[in-house]
Length: 348
Image (cartoon, rainbow, N blue to C red; front, side, top):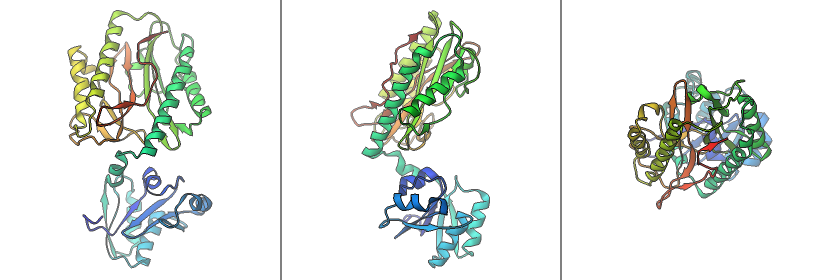
């Protein structure tokens, strides 16, 4: 704020509001000024906000109607006359208009991006522990459900069982809609679970994650129902080696694309680079997809204490897909793998 001459910023993205204030409600905005911060929310959250906020640090204002209008009016009430910012990627055109109207043209609003997200990239010790616990939960659940992966089971039934077991272990929700994709559907990286029944001699991709105490995990394993042919064993070996190479490239100060380049180099050696259709990984924390992105062209250096996924894959139309994904903590001496489910090729 000092560097850009901004006197206030309105934070409206709920994960960012929680990160800065501790307020976990799903409707609120945080108005941050140079010498104070105020949470704006409605009367549904009066008690919750009072319990979660540190009153010496963050004020509470219960409002009616538009939070954007309330924020603009609050700055007028405080006689702010100058530049203010809002999260450009999170505020609608209508809310931006409300901000400007309520501040009576006394405040010059400008959109900014990534201010809080850049802070969130580096995890504090308590955040790492929460992600580690979420990763452990997901790892335990996938091991539990592997005996259920057999011919005759529906994709949607396995997905429901996974989400039930994660909740039973304490997860507040899945980190995303659980992916279970079998046979040819495994070639769709973001396939949704359907009523398709598992059949013998096909691949099954399971991509799952848990939200535990607000923090996410993300884990993918691929199994084969039966005795896998040589070509599928070769594909799996290529993906496994690509994941190992990408993990070795994770070092503080290394460009974010280094892991992606390392994975692609391995797959290129197997003649499979064109079958890898997405980036190698992404940041993980309060959201299942956050910075940094481990993809081509991402030159920003990695920070120590970032948590990222490493998830190379190959996708063959008509045959299916293979993806391996783990969560890793970036450390100076090499990454720590937070997910601990078996990584060897499983033939069930």
